[in-house]
Length: 286
Ligand SMILES: NC(=O)c1ccc[n+]([C@@H]2O[C@H](COP(=O)([O-])OP(=O)(O)OC[C@H]3O[C@@H](n4cnc5c(N)ncnc54)[C@H](OP(=O)(O)O)[C@@H]3O)[C@@H](O)[C@H]2O)c1
Image 1 (cartoon, rainbow, N blue to C red):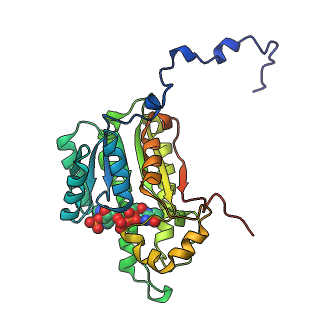
Image 2: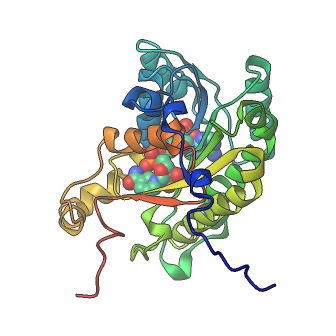
Image 3: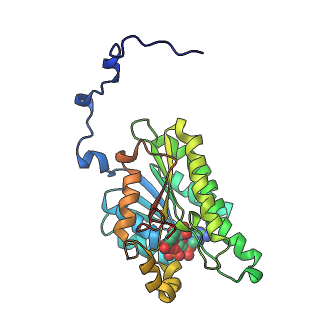
């Protein structure tokens, strides 16, 4: 169909004027206040999940954390309960039984879920010729299958929290290894994280019309149990290779997660945000 000729470009100028007087979100508090929301952080017992959970709890979010080891999960929830509301619900999320048990437990306690953080993950390293099927399945089950089926199970609660003005949020933790190629022999890990990023975008496309956003964070090196051996062996090399010359800190991770959970990110969906000191963004050919 041919475009209509526009004789007077100013004719509808008023339609394009934003009514700033009506907009109530002007202050930092309005934009970034996440208090009163309800969140679930998988793998919240330690490492990156604990960093995100602490950021949420400290800012008034009732935060559920989950992990397999009940004692560690309970201990972290007890520590975070000193600064806010944190509830431990241990579960093995690599199985559909574990996913059902966790989602049922949340449904018993909550009528809506504002923020789902798919963070629990695992890696496996072995030489190419010896890499076992069990290692491959372990990584793919917890890193890729689990975020999909947990999201599916919690969709009714996310929909209850969702509105056009303030969508419900899914935040999935990928990795720079899903964007760049890591030379360590973690053959399933990088592909699993590339899948996490693409799953986040696929969910974003399917859930946008239900007012649920879906984004991924791709962390660079952060100290954690998963990274302990690597940082011990290659720490200096890793820090030297990061453009900002350091590893990540809890505030680096909590800050981005709070942004993605806040009103400030209501119009952000389907993106993968590297939080990596510049590893991905500054990569060059020289
Ligand atoms: N640290 C980094 O530098 C880095 C970089 C990029 C991406 N990441 C990603 O960030 C996420 C967190 O990693 P992290 O470094 O914090 O690792 P971590 O210290 O090993 O923590 C992993 C968390 O996931 C839980 N978990 C593992 N398997 C589980 C299962 N089957 N069911 C339920 N929970 C399970 C663990 O608790 P239990 O063992 O008790 O189950 C723990 O709470 C992962 O997705 C990882 O791939 C980390």
